[in-house]
Each structure stands twice: as structure tokens, then as C-alpha cells.
Image (cartoon, rainbow, N blue to C red):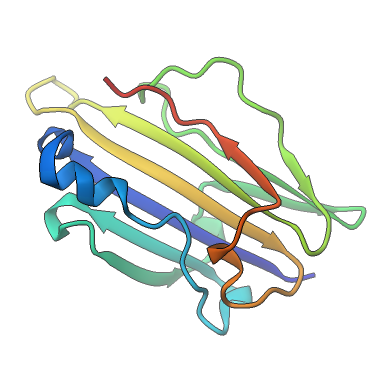
Length: 157
């Protein structure tokens, strides 16, 4: 069965916590149209503060995406991996994996805050959005409302 994967990572520093830069970051899309051959790779989009949050897309191997995907009994099990333990915000109990049937898709969002190893640099932040569809889909599937929406974003202070 076909699996369409889109991974959107938005990165910023304390400089984009407010004002015009934060406004640009906050209106960044959480879904993009897929390339026509999206079933064979992950569609990865990066948006970064240093590039004024303009999207840059690439194609990457599915194994590089921080999400567990497993097909069993006609369903796709989806569960994003949470990055290193030193990443904030602290997460309470994580929701269970989502099991999609053909024709369904999930949007799963997470966010993180990091400091440098020695605490010499300011905090940096990133937000991950995983859009994952099971079964054949149109290229504009991730521009619509997801079948399942999981929001694991926490306060970043």
C-alpha cells in the first residue's frame, strides 16, 4: 500500500520569539502540496529563521524521518519519535500510536526547545509537523483537513 510522508521542520532562535519574525513564523504552512512521485520518498520541508521562514523542500529516504511506520493487518501504525531527553518542553504521557486505514491521514505536531551544551548560547527552537497518508492520495491531500490531528506541542517559555 502507498504511504505519503511529509515532514515540516521550522527552526528559530530567541530573536523570533516576538515581533515581525514571530508573525512570519506563526503563519508558516503546516501542509504543502506533494510532488507527483511522493510515494517513494519523504517530502521534507525546512523553514528557518535565517531564511525568513521561506520553505525549502527536498526528497529524503523514508528512514530519515523521525517517525515509526508499520503496516499490519491492513492498517498503518504511525508514531513519531520524540527527540533527545534533554529537549523541552517536558511531555506528560504521550498519546498512543495512530492506526490509519486506507484513505486516512494524520497530522502530528511536536515542538522542542534546546540550549547549547554548556549554556553559552541562547535557546533555539524547532517545531515538527508530520503529515502521513495511507493509500493512494492526491498531491493536495495535506492542504485539507486531516482525518486525525494530534497536537503534542507544549509551552516553550
